[in-house]
Length: 182
Image (cartoon, rainbow, N blue to C red; front, side, top):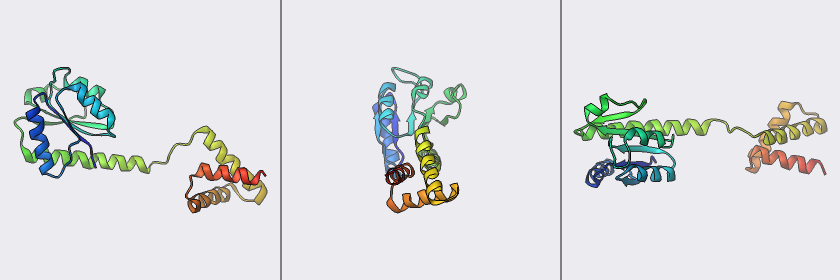
């Protein structure tokens, strides 16, 4: 589920956008009327979409974009003048007056994009610390010396034990070291 924040200086506008999104099957996590509220909500959520206007009482959309967590995408809803003069790269925009179907299609596209990015990030292998790498290497070396395994066989052995026990690779390597050193 994608987190959505709707932010407009006039609360009525924010509520109207929220209602359109909710009727279309989206969940809106927060409504804000100024930039500091947006940042407060955004920092408490795990990424998502910010749908907002160009001006707030405390900041412009450019400042808001700069302070927004990198896990958020911004959809700017503004007049053509503002959109033509924008200085923020990679910013989604919709011109006012609002066309409901354009809003829904744009939010749907942004949601799809965010979900793909999250999935891609989850699929990347976790980077191990130097300490974890050393533990893994020590366990492999111990298996190689004691059991006459190649490095590849030792690694596969640790992987298999890890999967069988439902533990992480490093934790399994630590168990092997503690059991075989006794």
